[in-house]
Structures are given as C-alpha cells and as structure tokens.
Amino acid sequence: MDEREVTRRAVLQGGAALAGLAVFGGLPTAALAAPVAAGYEIIPWLDQPVSVPAALRDAVGQPLVWEEVGAQITPSEKFFTVKHYGQPTIAGADWRLDISGLVGQPLSFTLEQLRALPRQEVTFTVECSGNHGGPLTGLVGNATWAGTPLAPLLQAADPQAAEVVFWGADSGPGPVGDPPAPVVERFARGLSLAEALGPDVLLCYEMNGAPLHPAHGFPVRLLVPGWYGVANVKWLRRIEVLGTRYAGRFMGRDYVTQRKVVEDGQESVRFTWVGRALLKSAPARVVRGPAGYQVEGVAWGSKIARVEARVDGGPWLPTFLVAEGSDTGYEWRRWGFDWVQPTAGEHTITSRAFDTNGRLQPAPTDPVIANKLTFWESNGQITRRVKIA
Ligand SMILES: Nc1nc2c(c(=O)[nH]1)N[C@H]1C(S)=C(S)[C@@H](COP(=O)(O)O)O[C@H]1N2
Ligand SMILES: [Mo]
Image (tube, rainbow, N blue to C red; front, side, top):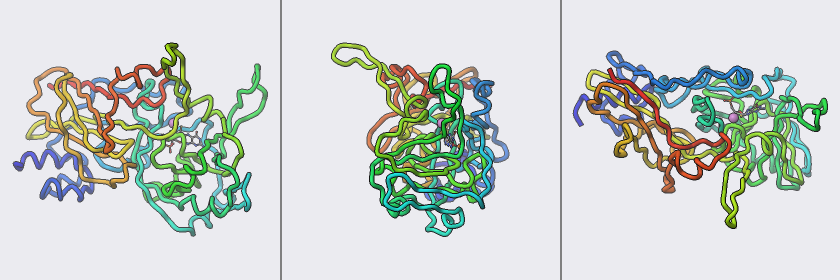
C-alpha cells in the first residue's frame, strides 16, 4: 500500500491505536495522537439528527455526535444517558445491595465489600434499543466497564427459583387503574437465572477507569454485555429471586416490540420484549485529507466478520476493519473505506454489517424491520447524506 493510503487510514486509527500497527504498517505517530490530524477535515452529514424532543429531555441526555467518533472508546462525559425516572441521589457509604427473595441465604453487600471482590473488566458497546427508531440517533457508546462478577454472589445466595429481578433505586408513576392509583413503580428488569449467571455479567462500579458517574448508575449498575441498554439496570439496589416471570413496565409495557406476522393465514401482531443486542452498523463520518476522502463507521451488536458500504445506492464495496479492541463481540469495530474521487454534490452512504455467524444487518425493507409497528430494536441498515464541495 502506498504511503498516502497509510496516512489516510491513520486518520481512522484515532487515539492510541497501537493494535492497528500490525495491520497498517508503520503509522506516523503524529496521526495517532489526534482523532483528526492536521490537514484533515470532517465533512458534517447533511441529515443532522433533530435535537432531543422536549417530551424526552428529562429522560435522554447527550446523544453521540457521530462526526466525533474517532476513537475506540467513547469518553464518559460524551456518553449518552437514559433516565426514565430521573437521577436518584445515593450516598455510597449508606448504600447496600441486597440479594433476597426465594434464596436459601439472603445476602447484603456494601460498596466497599463489592470493590474488595475479584475485579473484572469488559469493553461493551451499550445501545439503547430506541436508537434510530424514532427521532434519536446517538444513543450508543463504547466504554470499558469494571466490577465484580455477579455469578459467584448469586450462587452463594442459593437461588431457589429461575427468575432474577434487578431493582433500581429510581421510581416513577405506576400506571395502575383508570385513573391511575397514586402509587409508584420501581425501575426493574428481569433475567432468567441462567442469563444472570453468565460469566460476563457484572456488578459494575467503574466506567473508563473512574467510579461510575451518578448519571450512569453510581454506585453500582448491572452490566449485561451483549444486551440492549435497558437490561443494564443503574442505581442497583436489590436483586430478588422470584418464582414467577417479572412483568414490570420495562419488561411488559415499555420496551416491547410489536411486529406484524402472518400465522395460519391470518395477520396478527406479536409482542416481544427487548433483550439481546442486534447486529448493526452505521456510517460515522466522512473525512477529507490531503490524499482524498475516507468514510468511517462502526459496527456492533455481534462478532463482526465484515462490513460493506455503498455510495448512492450503488454496488456494495468492501471496507477495512480497524484492528483495535477485543474480539468478544461486545464492543464495536470501526471500519472505513477510501472514497476515491467523489463527484461534487450530494451523495448517500449506506453500510451493512455481517457477523461471524453469517448473519446480515437487515435492509429497511426486510420484513423483520418493515413489519415492525414500534420503534424499538431498529437495527436496519442506515443511510446518511453528505455534500461534497
Ligand atoms: N435504574 C435505571 N436503570 C436504567 C435506566 C433507568 O431509567 N433507570 N435506563 C436504561 C436504559 S433504557 C438504557 S438505554 C441504559 C442507558 O445507560 P447509560 O445512561 O449509562 O448510557 O440504562 C438503563 N438502565
Ligand atoms: Mo434504553
């Protein structure tokens, strides 16, 4: 590969992309030091996301600015937040995590006790399942999370049933009855015991090397790598083993996908709750350098095998994957391609990801997307618009 190509690819490498050296050869250190090196310019998308609608402003904060995606890790202060019931104030010293319900041995932990237990890290791309479904498009970010594995603690509590509910400290109006009764509902999500015992499930107290920020769940949140954001309960207060399936708001009323299906010749609607993350990719930005244009993006939600992109609805082109990050399938892979001599004017860029199981990110016309009646789990292929001067 010629030197200009190396330099252009170096832009995509962003910050400390040392793993990339093996793939792309000796990158100039200057290019590694900054997300966009001197002489490079980001071309903003024409289709800029709408600002967070007033009705959602209490719940949704700081969506990702796609043009800023120039490194593997999303800085914590730029990481999106979702708070359905506001942000509870919790003093770390007073906080306790209880494991209770149908257990042989109820347990209770202080923050200090959890921090003294074996520490495990995972880099995981958290995406809200509402991302790209409605007007919002930046509800995704990649961070390195640390905590202690849940499985040994849950096992020590000797669970006697198969449903595990994770209760947050936050609560809001519980819509029971008409008119609603004056009661509140706590934020909670359920997992099966088998899911909760997964080796990567963490009681997480750290994000990108610092204690969890209050917005991200201080002192402790559940971290369930491979699942949509809603499973990752913040401000965790209690883990309860139940003898029945839990059907709170965020399992049975909200975060429920409705899809048209045809069964026995009859069209009907099927309701499924949002659970595991789905394969997805998105173009992130177009960069112009001295040697030409490069399109950069990310792909996540599964182990990424490859990503293809197309310009103006033309043939699908291969992209290169940046050799950075873990291969757990939990964190996004950055990809890019050299956009050779684009003509002046408006263009569209579309991407599609393939995972290592041979699955393909669905097109918007795929029935799995097209037959959806709700906006959750919108992992269809994304097209952005850009104008080349
Ligand atoms: N206790 C509690 N946990 C929660 C939520 C919440 O409102 N309350 N929102 C969930 C949703 S819908 C998402 S997408 C993620 C977002 O995590 P973040 O705010 O750290 O980015 O947190 C999840 N955990
Ligand atoms: Mo979410």
